[in-house]
Picture 1 (cartoon, helix red, strand yellow):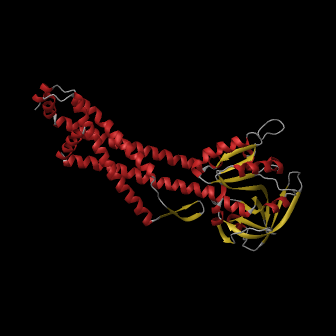
Picture 2 (cartoon, rainbow, N blue to C red):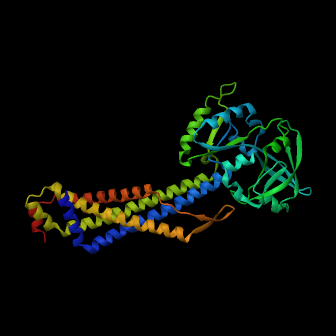
Picture 3 (cartoon, rainbow, N blue to C red):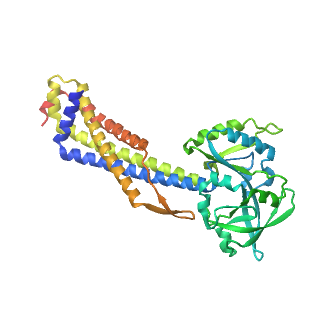
Length: 412
């Protein structure tokens, strides 16, 4: 086998220009795929991070049926205090959970005493919310980064529309589950940029204030946002939590809770899937480049070396060894292109990080994209290149191994 490698390398060096051109095509393909995968993968991770860490959390737990009616923010589908206590015990016992935050969500009317509009409100425990969605504070464009009783954070859409600034007094009016109406004055403590676009209408207040507005003796919970220690284990965490909560049923024997990952709650998941599809097709392009390049050079090598093939066959070289020789040549081309491509691609990714790419996502301005290149990407793409290079060499190699020595020696 060692001799076959020496012969394959010698044959590649005999045709330096062709070898260099083929290796260059493979290298360009590898570099393009690595840089594209790195940039799009990093953008996808940043986009997901902005959504989960500033608003949704990694996953959420609701009462069964709440998500189907979430646009109406139904108060009659809140989690009751006793059920929430059981849920809390399950969440605290789960080792994969880093933090969780209960929310009381409701719709109401918002007024600056001269104009009135509608608003979606989230009653939260500030410290727990900021641990669960740590980028929430980065959305505060004006005001303090904390929230106390009697204070409210409002979306920039309402602040601009009603000409409200930090420190102003406003009124929130809401209808509770029994149909009675109640209102409460708040002081604006912060202005929030939307995480999803200019139409965001979500405000935040303390959960005890929310319960007071809704005239609840004890705060009910609309949803519980959960943050994981390891985001990559999200599917496993969802399955584990579903298993833990499966035993909690109502009087009719139906499950009380339902668990949803961020993917099921945000339309941005479709964009993430589109990025994955684009990456897949880019890898298909790489396979096509390698396949055509290797097959072309090996076919030419077989055609130009017919008499040489006839000679080594005539002196007793077995067809299998002739086949192996050409396959090893393709393998060496694939390895050469993959190694150079990995080095150049990694260097370009480092240069991109040094230069810095900034972009706007929703209302977040000037986000810095930090590209990363996972070792698994290097290994997978290199393996694809080498395997395809070997496969592309098989047809010409079979042709060479099946030549009749006499006919090959007569070839002009």
